Length: 211
Length: 161
Image 1: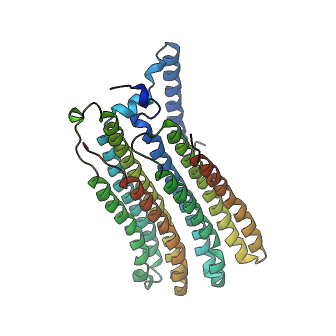
Image 2: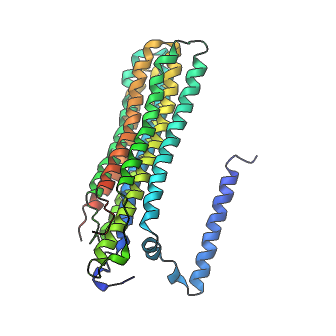
């Protein structure tokens, strides 16, 4: 009986096989020096890293918010068939999920404010190392910041959605339970906040430019 | 580009690994904490219908999952204060990557364990009150796994050289 994960296993095995075959080919034909992570990191533009970070930051946050909203929303609407009183109170759970998307957009704007144009042709020989390090550091920091806020908000949104769904269904049975299960949701939404904090810490030291 | 020997141990790309350490510390701890909160949360929602008096005691697994996220936050903040734009050696960069990975992946494992134990524990405690202490004991062992990751991360991030 083929499981639903069989295509995942097939793709992963093929990727691993391709990687192993290529590495053996390069090693055995004396071209091992071409596998050069330092060259890859240094020759890719810091703009690429920065914008990837910004894009992933906002999009993953929104995926998390959307996942949470549909999980909670479908439970509210299903439970509301027999207990329509739960409609308005449980919108609080939906707002918790939406807050995750707001964190994402705020961080995307903050990160993109740090991004400016720099021109390596204008650098003197003495300051080349310092400016090159600084701009690369800025690019990587923005990438890391975007990834941090994006993935933290993704996981937080899914978590708050699942707990909110449980809260809605418990509320439908006994209306005094909602406020107590909201405590668990608050713990869940703290996780997204931690991601925002670390993302801000990463991006405050990022300085792109010619100075 | 210029390959001067003077800056050979702190090339311009060395901050990538440190930044990835900070990122992994936060992301994987967040995943573990979210899993723990969600899984224990569904257990709490289930038992709250039949035993509303047990809800406050059952929030303990959720709190412990939140602590896992705090471990990741602490290590990420500690590492990111050490990352400098220039003269950031590859030694420090890779130790920061190792620190971030250790707290992150340990936190992920601990969070998943706390979630599953919390879910089963609250469901069992609702039917058999004597199981509460047992649930706490197992949760403590699961939490300590995240602590091990934090310890190794702190050892690595305070290495100088």
